[in-house]
Length: 458
Image (cartoon, rainbow, N blue to C red; front, side):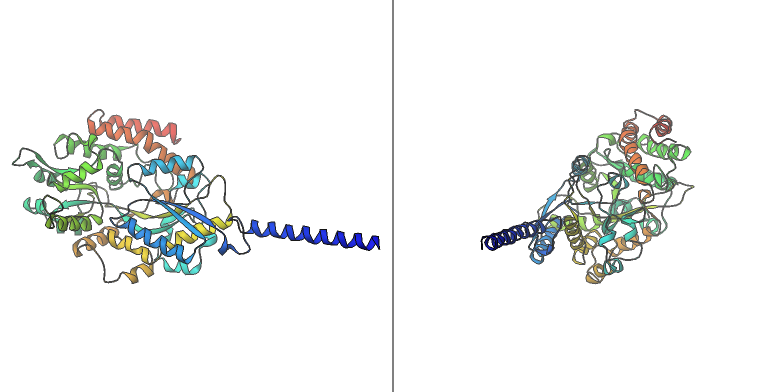
């Protein structure tokens, strides 16, 4: 009897232990790292992005709200970064091993090199792949692996003030259709530069002294796709870079660009263009057309003072002996994991948010920016609702024929990281020295070649 009672007690204890163990298992399965019922697991996805267009913050809020309604277990925490300070903030977070789950940017080999960029291939369904237009998914791949979902195809150009161009007799329609060489641009810049009645100068061209966009657009239009080419070979060490730097120096020496270019911030550059103090602005994107249309409406409504402008999208001039190239690629969301990996289910949830922020409705970004769509569903949804003038859209399509795909998509991650470091540590200070007149094109070219041996090994 005692033996039977003891056996019963042992059986009860075993059952209680099993139940307790089962309870712990259920709790752990509700974590983000793995779940028998993942749709019920609570999770938070962080998104760092930028003011992609004027109303993007409101658009993003709508997309996030709709996603959270469909997926009440997932909270999406967004942060809008500034274009000026955001990249550095992200680099600091990435180097610390704690990047956001999603970051708005072009895919970059240096990101992949950290080992924290999330390989998206396991989550890419055929339906998603087939919705992207031909050649667009590849713009967010490194080494054939998918690391981002494009939201739009970016396009860098120059922009002109139609009134000033026409007053100087510039045939901007022909330039949009046929392009122009550096010699042709220099002749045009001379016509566009003059003293205004108030004593100020109207410059042929204005750019800012802080970014590398200007030199990168020009080198691509002089036979150099980037500091490295697709094979990882150093490009900025011969006569092509000297000619490019010399072209810029000539514009400064002739007074076609402001002498204080090194000190001009991006906002100041735009203000000068709006004020009619510059006929052409670099860089400009097709979205300037919509921005200026909105500004004109604000002027009519008395919200803004100033001259109403008509925008002209212009291709970047190319070297006299080089083909025209248009800087294009894709920008969208790139996914990351953290040093303290939160597990596979968190990665799946990250991709779910990423896909939602890149869906058909998200195609409004392409539409607002007057840029090519990347998905069939986006093109279908916004058909007949295109923004921007017909002239701007036609010029954008013409420039896209000469697309220069970013070389970072072809480089191995180590080479991409070295090129980024070279630009930050060598190119940026040298270009600012060129603008300020402290260094000559020849001395800068020598410095590029010397530093390339040290930093790039070639």
